[in-house]
Length: 409
Image (tube, rainbow, N blue to C red; front, top):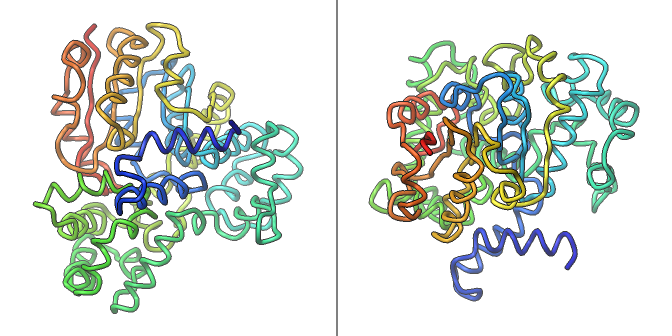
C-alpha cells in the first residue's frame, strides 16, 4: 500500500460511518478526500485557553494533534521538554514541519513573521529557498515544491496570502462574499472600536442573514461545513445542541465570535473577516508569532517530533508514564466507541501522575461517559470548573464544549 493509500485508509476509518453508496457515506468519503489536502493554514482552537487550562510547566512532555501547527508552536512559549505531534493529513504535517524549520533556521523574527504573520511577502519565497529548503526532509520539501495544476510551487502560498488557502481559507472567502451580498461587510466588524459596536453590527447586519430562507437551506447541507473541517458525524453532534436545528447553533457560535471578545485582540475574528492577522504582538496574533516569544519558540522547535499517523498509534509507540499533557482538538467527535477506548487506553498507559488531557466537542456534552469503558475512564477525573472556564475563554468560538481530564492513576 502506498503512503497516500495508507493515509486515506486511516482517514476513512476515522470518518466513515455510513454505507458507501448512502448519502451520508458519499458525504463522508468526499470529506476524507478533502482532508488529505490542506484544510487549516491556521488551527481554529485558542492556544491561550489551552495553556491556561493545562497549566503547562517548563520541561513537561506534550502529545498533540498537529493540525495547522499554530497551537503546537504556541505551546513552545511555555518551554516544554518535548512535543510529539501526529496528524493524518500529510499537508498539516508538512506545514508544521515548515514552521518548525522556519523557527530554527530563518535569520530573525522579522523574517519569521513575514512568512507566517504577514504571510503575503514575496521575500518569503527567497527565504524558503535559501534558509529552509536545505533543512527539510524529503517528503516535506517535495510537498512545498510541488507545482500541481497551477504550475507554481506550493510554497508560493506564503507570498500570496497563506491564510487565503486551504479549505478553511477558501470557506472564509466564500462566507465573506455571501455576507457582502446580504449587506454585511465583515471587515467593518473587524474594525469595530468597542464591544458595543461589535454587538450592534451583529444584531443589525449578521443575525438577519440567518433568517434568510436560502441561507438556512444551505447551512443545513452537510457539505457546506466541510470547509470548516466538520465531517457529517460532527455536524449531527452540533445540531443536537438545538434539537436538530444546526442553524441555531451556527448563529449562536457566530454571535460569540463577533461579540464576546474585543475585535483588536481576537485574531480568530480578524481571520474570519480578513483572512489575515492585523497586528504583530500580544493577543493580536497566536503566541508563537509574538516577538517576545521568539527565543523560546526557536529553542524549543528542535524538540518537536511530527509524524503522519494517528495519535493512538503515536502513543502506542511511546514508553509508559511518559506524557504530562495531551491535546486532542475535536478528533474524538469523529471516533467510534472502539477507537475512543483504544485512545484512552493508550493515554492511561502513557500518562504520568497528574497528567492532563484537553479536548473539544462540537456539541456541549462530554462525549466520553458511557462510551469509554469505566475501568479506563475511571482512572481520570473530569475538571468541570477548568473546562467551563476554558470554553468561556476560547476566542475561536466554534465549539460547544472544552473538556479537561486529570489522571489519578
